[in-house]
Length: 208
Length: 68
Image (tube, rainbow over the protein chains, first blue to last red):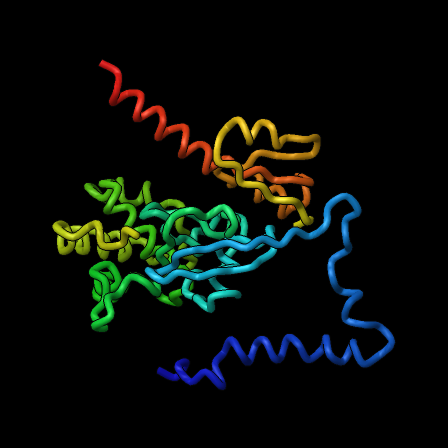
């Protein structure tokens, strides 16, 4: 894949281009520090050390108590599969599993995570085959731009696991926390139905 | 989001003991964290009670199993 070269990926490019105006500012009269958020008198920033298991790997992290699980995954661990759509729990693009249950990682403090986390990166086994739900999304063309897809797939797996994928209406209801601005909804429902049938004996795969 | 002190007590007694004015309890977080991001809620301390809720529900489950 074109994105696999670590030297010139899109993320690195965006980071560098975002830094450029800041650096120019730093060279002039104003320092970049003036852009930092104002300190609050009654509470100092609190740093905490936590241990977290993500995709069967254990991480020891020292982070700001304010950091959400989504930011920790993306900024600290480099797992950028979970997306920051609205950052207010309305779009579902940040959905990951904690202890096998789907949660919105943008509304979860990293410090409060106590159970193993599974992200979209942790679904496929080492042999390169895809998780049945990932394969079903491809087979049924259940996305266009793909931005919401990691969240959709994590939610879809939990939806099947919870037993809420028996009928189309039920799937739509229990997937209603994940928005798709491309409106691929009919194909998402079709993919979930197909994956439900395909993976019926193996629904606990996402656990842990 | 404004800075806050973070505490994660293991049992309900410590959670109650940890409280001081300006502190908020964190359970699910879908309202509290959202409003903190919007600067509506400004806790000086967040007390995460998920760990003690787990302990409490385990204790309840044990009590149910032990009761005749």
